[in-house]
Image (cartoon, rainbow, N blue to C red; front, side, top):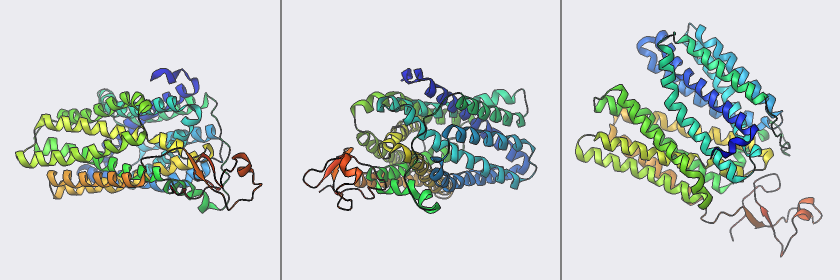
Length: 445
């Protein structure tokens, strides 16, 4: 897997990603402590509002920026967004009012909503071979999981010698280092998208491509499955471990570590597995497994009248495996489904739509967990996960070749596209992607 790091450009980008993730992890811890300083017992409400603002920024800003990101110099744009994030984080230690936190978080997460999809769309151009790109996706998944484990540990170590306000300095350093690493390499700049039209056409282009592509409609359904299972773990682990089992804070960390460990284990195995199996063969069964685990665990809780600690750890580890098995290959579907010029818009659409799913499942998991109890919450979120699985099965045909035969009765015979791909028996074939010449998916008939 680490062979892809021999590519200097990717190595610098991956290092930038890791450093920025650690900085973001420190920000998460510092933000919680800042909220407690400003709001006391109302800190939970402040953090909940901040998370909602973060998701809204992701859902609203990403498609808008994605529509124009391809028109800008890629390296300069990424560096500028890192500098903006560093500048905003620099102001956070000095806020004195809760509303100031909300404004700065919206601005910071808006910059992240601009940076992250553009960064993700760059990697397929740096690593054009699918095998290399698959390994890069697994490394990225590992980076996210390691950050969730290591950043709190690093923050705890730092807080033993410095005040929490200094953690924001670590965030600033992380974003500045990321900017320096991106600046140190030359990034491929794809040709600009050929789309014409106004702001609406540009900002909705990625979502229109996304929703017109069967495998990506299935990916949206799988995003719902991932968000339902993930929200159960992220929102309710502390409720189960501390509230129902009466165990310690370290046991909360252990349960979350099992989830992260399962995700990391899957990320290590997936490159070789995806060399032999189709994405659909891996992702849809993983989503079904997520639903089965949630509902199965709910029945176990109800039958036993309690929650066996070992069963909880095993279930959380298996949820981590299924979670990674869906998320890791997602970039491969996006890469297959658009020309390089349209990838920034398409990755931005995935970023926005996937976070829209989380915007639904986060409050659902929280509300059910506090009002209906753990078994009901597990069952409902398991049902949502299985609904996503069923929709993915419907949208994503079992046979999903890249090259599709289709006709172009709307184009003149001397059109460059028809000349490039000769017509036989009234149809021609090539790798099919939604664009200005191919606005609908061809019929399978």
